[in-house]
Every structure is written in C-alpha cells, then in structure tokens.
Amino acid sequence: MMNCIQSTVCFLPAPEGGRASLPVGTGYAPHIVIPEEGRYLAVRFIDIPQDIQPGQAFSVTLQLMYPDVDYSALKKGVLFEIREGRRAVGTGVVDVTGASLDDSCI
Image (cartoon, rainbow, N blue to C red; front, side, top):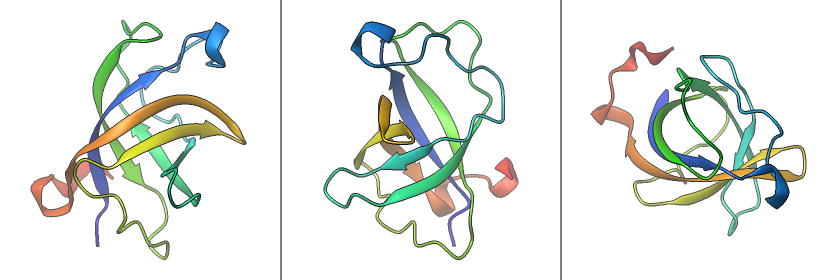
C-alpha cells in the first residue's frame, strides 16, 4: 500500500481560478482528480515551501489520506488537478510513488 507520492505541482493564479492566498507548511488537504477518471482522491500536502508564487512549479510530498481508498491510478507521469470542491486551484504530475519513498511522511 502506498502512503505517499512525490509530485511536482503548480497553483493557478487567482485570475485563472486559483486561490487568493497560497497554503504553506503542512496540513493543506484538498482533493486531487485525474481528469480521465473523475474520482476525487483525498491527500494532505507535506511541507509546502513558504516562498512559492502562483504559477510556479514546485516539488512536494502528498500523503494519501485513506488506507481503504484505491490510489493505484497514481503512477509516475500521471497528471492531476488540485481541487477544492469543484474548483480547480492547481495542477500536478506524479514523480515518485510507493516503495521509492520513505514511508515516514505519515
């Protein structure tokens, strides 16, 4: 079972539907959606940098929140949207999954 994935993400600027202020640190818990599948998958961002700007890509670890949910579609190279409800606030791509990561992210 995967506990975390490493991803490159980018938050949209506010005029493009993004957040007015960006989250920082640990605890931001949106959903990610793989457009082809449409399923909402709960994640928690681990350690968002303080100095990111809207439109800037950055690397982050995402904790997969629920052990009974099937996160197997999150494979290296898969693109996803970051959503707050129905609103897309960012995008991302899976860089590293499962055994390649230290399970200490939880």
